[in-house]
Length: 330
Ligand code: SAH
Picture 1 (cartoon, helix red, strand yellow):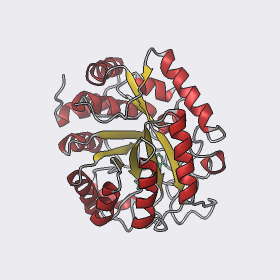
Picture 2 (cartoon, helix red, strand yellow):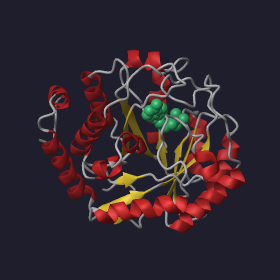
Picture 3 (tube, helix red, strand yellow):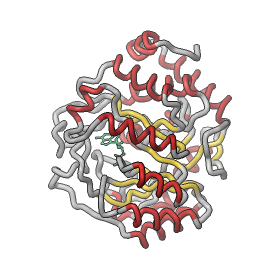
Picture 4 (spheres, helix red, strand yellow):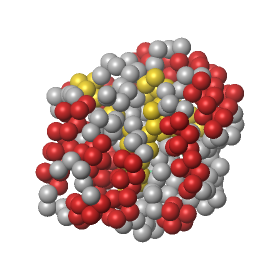
């Protein structure tokens, strides 16, 4: 049961009677190929300013109910330093699509953070090949850019003024430049079918992504999708588990969106195929404002608290926090 056809994936997604078997198999594959260690990545949400209009996302430029912020390079670097001091071996820089951070500014930030003995992951959206190349040459190790959905029609409806083929171009450029590449999808988008989720999973495998982030869609009241229901936690968990079984040695985070829908969501995910957690290390001043969806967890917590909290939970299920950079297992 390690090479599923599209038909089989659809069957698994449809039928909930074998879920526990699916989750334990994914957990077994994780244990065999990735071991007992959990990699923690310190996430800095450095700007919530965004030029895009993704219909599900609270950061979309048409949302006027959100107070916007931009953290300046010096403060980003000091947040990163604090995170490295806490033990993080990867810093993830995430933001809306904010043109304030030019190629030059990003390269400066990356170079400074790379001096701290940490891996650097970027998650700042679609940029040119030249930008990606410059970031890589400045030391960036990894890049996250979810395809969100591989259903081109749905993609078009959800992403006005964006182009599915450009998203594919980004993934291709990043691979070619030698990044570890992460992608993923939202689960439970309006009109999304099991067939389209099966296509998403097979797409991850086809491009041989190094990291896959899967999260349930969470309704944001200040977006055009305000009347669509939340995605299902269990469905998202199943998409994640199938991905683990198919892709074996990749890095898979237990996503924050899962914990938002289920109070123990990240631990359940860690026991169903995930081997990574991305705790927030952004200062409290900004956390609540990075509202891609509502009821985000830990918005009132300090970075030190989040680190201790997740370390305790990881220990409680008999797993260990890795002291390594956490690149994809060979
Ligand atoms: N601007 C960057 C980072 C986007 S935010 C980029 O384009 O890649 C990171 C992820 O949050 C997105 O890829 C999306 O999958 C997820 N997200 C956005 N809105 C969401 C919502 N309402 N519910 C759940 N996840 C959401």
